[in-house]
Image (cartoon, rainbow, N blue to C red; front, side):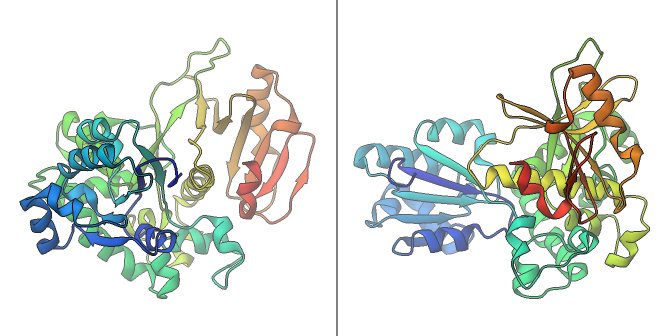
Length: 374
């Protein structure tokens, strides 16, 4: 797309490898980082002159620090007509800002780079056959590349990056309350989002909770799975479900210090589900596709963990952390298929075991092979 669009946007959480990817793909481009104070001051003093100084393409890292620059990028790229002239990266989702998205409309190819997927780690020396290790370790490249223990990486990540980004977006006067909010969010992965309940637990108003979730979403800390719209004559829940982009971060917020602790932890199943949903999300984003993931739940509690709605086909998916298949694993799939008139050939159970097979109820997919569903 660099040969067709004037601007390429690479966004994703901090430390997901955006800068490395940009430099590898565009090795001859100049590079600036707006997180560097003197570079930022230089850009702010005369944005047009700053941009025109670079003649052979420019990678602008942490571009969200100076959002006014996007208007100048728009003007200069329109004047030059050069494809792939600017590569902009950032740890915030630019398109969630109306001001920025308006400047880039029709001029930018958007891609999101998340931490490693399961498939990306599968053929490396970092691979392990125990999904609990990946759930606890998470998928940030630096943990593997620099061999940093997760119990050291994530607390520093939260303090160094998340809190700084929070202050850039909104003035949170009580960081202690915000930290508690993040821990409460981690304890609700895979659950329906209930703003009022969290507000009561924190002692703040609902508006504040919604604002804080918006921050976490903008900074690629959490994302929301929306309910599927087909009701099959059932009253459906309307609230989204909450997930973290990385389970290692969620484990850290929950105070889990070792992978062994996760084996008996009350949130093990929810965190496994989170890991699988996040991995499915990555597999779509890595192929420049919009994520077609939903969940289904009626108001009496009947539920299906995931529905992949690609338009031409709808795949119901159940997710279970157990390593041995139990007949109860198929309850949600069987109920959903009875309503939708679906069939086992297009139904899937992702579980914590290694074997892959087909049963009369569904296709059985190992957690190692979620990419097979894409």
